[in-house]
Image (cartoon, rainbow, N blue to C red; front, side, top):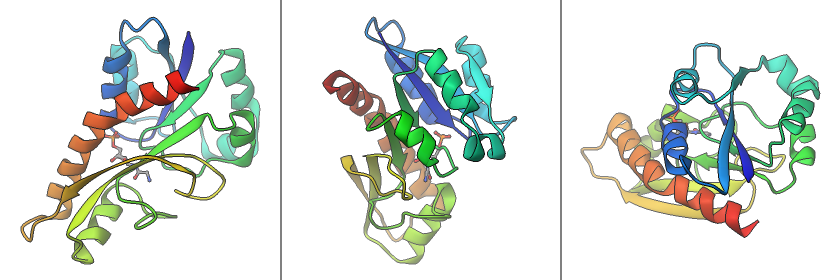
Length: 189
Ligand code: GAR
């Protein structure tokens, strides 16, 4: 059984799709939700699905190994970042080499890096009058939005699109593809 932890900071719509996808799966278990915010919507989703959850403060996440030991004690094999907004520290990457993946709501390498998350990404894409955007699923390394790409999917942008409407298109792409891409990566590991 592969035990997965989902790290998320927001409402958790991707986490929900991933949880649903693996419900009843005998090879993969979503074993833990890790949040960076006490009031993140993803914590309600964890509760509804009876998945253990923890909230970390920034100092603990960036400057200690306590939670890494906790992940190891819990037998976590793999980490999925689904809207997690803090940069992953070296200690965590070393503890889970090639075992952390992230989803980014744009076509990396464009529109990535510090400050490029959620709505800010879609605003930048619309302001640049791009004709396409999409999603990138990639391994996490020590640089923001930088690790090897696993998967991309694209959507067209019309002149009527706004950051909000683009966000909806991107969420649809994410919900369609992220769970099955995770499954492929896990089963290939
Ligand atoms: C998703 O669109 C994800 O790609 C993005 O945050 C959103 C979380 O939505 N991640 C980033 O911007 C990371 N740089 P959700 O909480 O509904 O899953």
